[in-house]
Length: 288
Image (tube, rainbow, N blue to C red):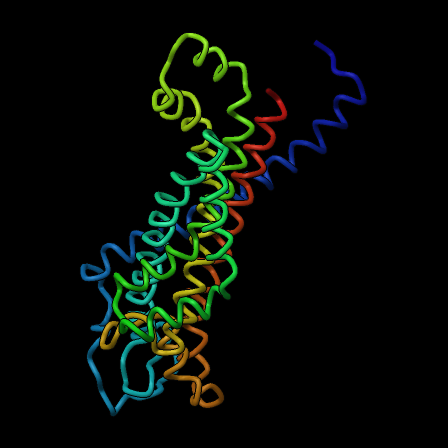
């Protein structure tokens, strides 16, 4: 079959654009995969002991032995960044799962049943949103004391209203679709409609949004650890490492920019991957 000139030109334009889009997904996915594997298998990696101090090698520049140099106590910055990344990923994923579980459920119920149920749930979400997020997280951590579980809960509470509003908005639209009306006409109970008809259609947009919220959670954890309100020492955190070495920024910038690089690449990858997933979901919805 012979292609027209217009079709050949369109293929020339669409082909590179599609390859570039695939690359935008592949590179962030590759970094996230490496980051997760490194965080999970950190004790098995052939890297220096992240807790070992050596005052004779303080603030050494990057080398073959210490890829990102050493900090003010002679500890390996790369090894500590890997452990700090593990804390960031645990907090990011844990807090998003917490917020998604509670907020998604509340939004699903509010959007489907409406009426007073929607009114009360929306009012509670509005009250939570009225507090400045970082100030609320700092207040919770300052009152109860720093711990990994508490950081997850504190950030998860902040995410509940966002997930609730997204789930509610999508449920309001889905509740009027033909398949839901047909299920209701057939006598299916509300719980069955929610679990079998509405919830499966909510999974895709919520997952796409969750990737972006994991990035926000990692930033929040880094801010709390910078203020000394996250996981207590000796467990390294990326924000805590930056805070501890900021006085040595001019003398040993690698001690600050090493963990900052891990933080930047992870947040960038999550944002790019989430944005690409959302675009593909939008394209699929438009095709339907």
